[in-house]
Length: 571
View 1 (cartoon, rainbow, N blue to C red):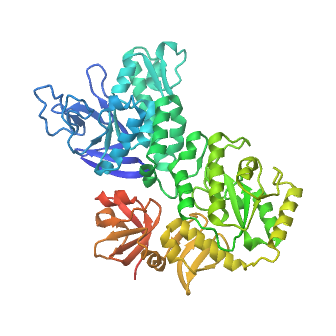
View 2 (view 1 turned 180 degrees about the vertical axis):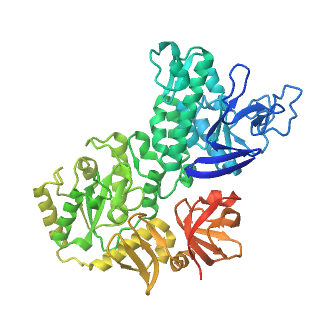
View 3 (view 1 turned 60 degrees about the vertical axis):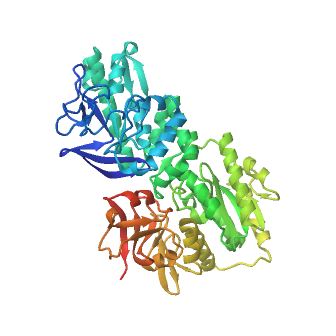
């Protein structure tokens, strides 16, 4: 058996499972082949060891039978966590274990997923028996499940339940089947036809799941699908709130655009990472001593929107541009400093705008604003907000409100300009190049932590924002570009951050000739995430720099697959 991961989206993955030379795309359903409900001709089949054919997934007989000693089965007796069977030994396929109990306890299910994906089983294909109904497949794939059996599809057919991607319907209540599969086209008469439809519904949903994984947008599908079942909502919330670290570890730092349309969007791993990085790493540009709080815009990046162009014009006209620190107040991110507006997900999210904020959003934004004001030491604070002002202003002592709740109006823009002009009197201003340099240093700290603080001290910024070359003593360390929104390192930039022992991938004593594969990785620092710029080195000697294709946890245990896509090789 061989399992290759082709695409990743958090814990979810699209892979290739090869059994006896036959390849199956995962996530997949392993169909039980029984006398009553035959498995479809094409696709993965689940058969008892001894009866399995080439390419089948084989399962050992029950431990109660005389043939319980079958050692060549892919799944041993006890893979469902039965208390009457022996523990599942380490083998080619991982399993959640006692699935019947876990389906009754959402917290225990989330705990089991976290335990399984934090260990050596991370890269093995994961089997999830009994639970794979069409409306659950998106969430289960999001949890890193790769293979499901057809037993729940059979059970539903035997009970007269017509399965859909949003839940089950009683077959007798359906006047017009909401599906055009062959069984529905014939009228879905009888249990065999109902099973045929249920299998088709599951297969169709898995195609959609694989598509979303490949596009990096599975979380949005999950947030839509979980509405069909309280248990699923509970599982996702437990994963987000109790096991953020495992999710965040596998979430790429440069993901696909998304819409934050549900309460759960507040706790997406990439959104939580944004807020935690602000609190742990962020420092304002030193000369940005006047905090200006402004609302978000529908158009991203914010600076391209008409409203923000008017805000920026008022700032320029005030003569205080180098002193003003523009910070956007928004949900679900909380705060976005202007210099970070290109960094994912600040440039890539969308939200429904109604002017009404729910309690969780209000609490989150108030907490973030309070943190910003308390930690950054501004000389003055100006609030130029819309509906957010009722949330933000009460938590700031001594802020000046220039918007009266209508920040885009001409009178309020004039008031903003005049207020900033008065605050800039007798203040020490700096030229645009110095402020651009400080903004770049702020980005470097946010992206690389301590490595950015040390490696990018006293750099120069050359170019017109947002296309900026970053130099130190005439040597280019990296560049900021609009499409990526992050600093891309040169070899010299890699050497600059290597001394902090952050964002480093350790290799044996060889010089990479092309991309770095996992077999050549000896270790990686804990901060490495998919999409990060990383230093490839051997005992402090920098050999290359590139973009991580795996997180640190995968790099340490993987024996195949691309670990780092190399951009520059050391000379």
